Amino acid sequence: MIEQESYLECRCGSCRITLSDPTMRSRTECFCFDCRQRGLISASRRPENALPEEVANFERGVDLFYFTNALIVDHESEELLEFSKLTADGFNTTAMSSCCGTLMCGTHPMYDGNTISVNADSCRVTTSSKIPVQAVVFACDAPQEQASDIAQRSEVPVFFDVYNELKHPVLQAFVGAVTAPIPDEAKARATTNFETLCAAKPLTISNDFFEESRARLAKQAS
Ligand SMILES: [Zn+2]
Ligand SMILES: [Zn+2]
Image (spheres, protein in one colour):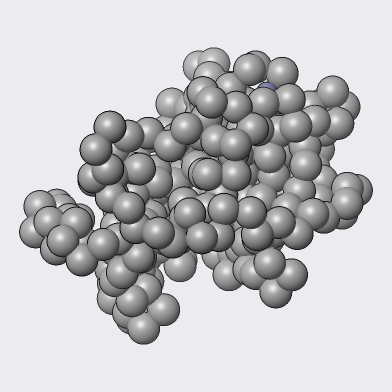
């Protein structure tokens, strides 16, 4: 059986990150201000990168996919990766493509180097391993009216205060999935990982769009 190649591709097609392990580890829908801020930074690079309308209006959170941090990246694509954090002491590090400002992937210390997160509203993801959203997270950052709508209609658990609800079985499963060790086979096939790619480049700290991402101007008249 031929396994279909799984990869992350920027919106203009110049930058590609091949996933050594195609298995999607988890999937969440995230309302956090930081995801929104990164989305607005990406949108500032190219009008086509604007947040999807439902995300801009807080009707849904950002669609986050999680994959094993075992990657295959050629020289041309590596050259196009830019690394940044929103603040010097921020947890997330983000890889963006310089060609078109696509949010390619990111990492968080909680993953222990085993996982990357991918904003699938920005990055084009090709994989045969798609799973449904497991949880809605950081609903606390949506405006109150939208947050209660989300909590009512969601078919999966909705978490407002994620860090204080980590004992919930769904969040336990999430933590288990993102901290799971990298399978040997995936490690053997990989040529690099997020941290190695990041270490070879300068790290930019940019808190652009901080105010805008926290403005909660939902349902703006268009
Ligand atoms: Zn591109
Ligand atoms: Zn988020």
